[in-house]
Image (cartoon, rainbow, N blue to C red; front, side):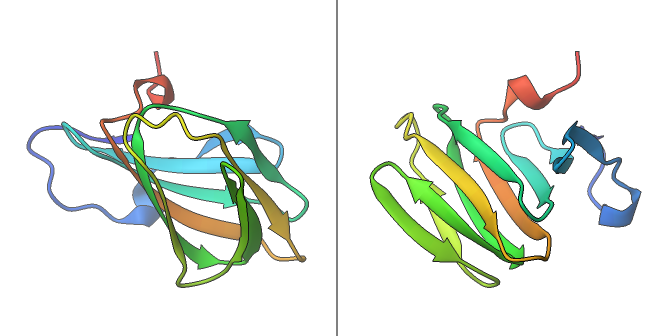
Length: 118
């Protein structure tokens, strides 16, 4: 994870990659009140059903996935966005489709303290 006071410019190639599971990795840049996360999910992988109180905006860079937001499901691909409202605890999940990695950018507010290394 990168971030903190005094830093204003970043190169994604220099951000350390954290392996979350055998099919899921992330790169994190954190501000004081917002968090930027780039996720890569390998083919056949998923982000399991979960919820949180944080507002989340997600932008798809690469690949295709079925995204479930509450009772709604959609297939998303490059250029698509989805939104998890603030304090909604909306259950959501991502299941990768096809044989290429799924890459998305998530912006969280407030920051996901649970993502920060202890």
